[in-house]
Amino acid sequence: MEGLENVNPVLICNRIIIIMVIAFVMFYATVKVIGPENKQKWFKKRQKYTFFNRRGIFGEDINFGYPRTWQGMLIALGLYALLLGGGYWYVFIFPY
Image (cartoon, rainbow, N blue to C red; front, side, top):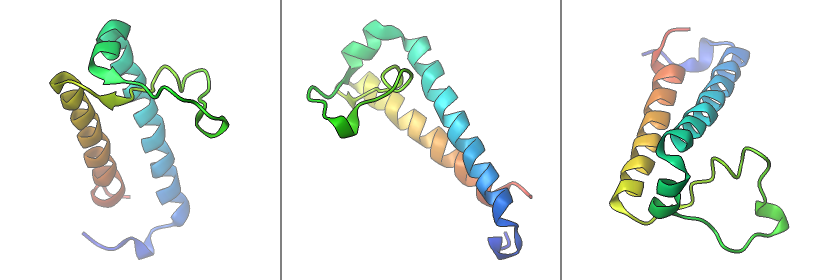
């Protein structure tokens, strides 16, 4: 693996933006697959909201919260592993 010093920074930025869009879609699809009942059972949302941590229309849908059961922990770890592993592979290993 060569360093990224010879790669155009715009290409790196484009890949990071693509990863962010994929992450949003992945989190949104996961919420729709597990359903609101399981999401409420498996995750605990923040109770106090301030101006700085309010979310928009899609932000509240994909806000999982903190895992409170082993199922929630398994989903959270799986999402993080897919996001970090896939992002690392796409930015650093997949050829430009």
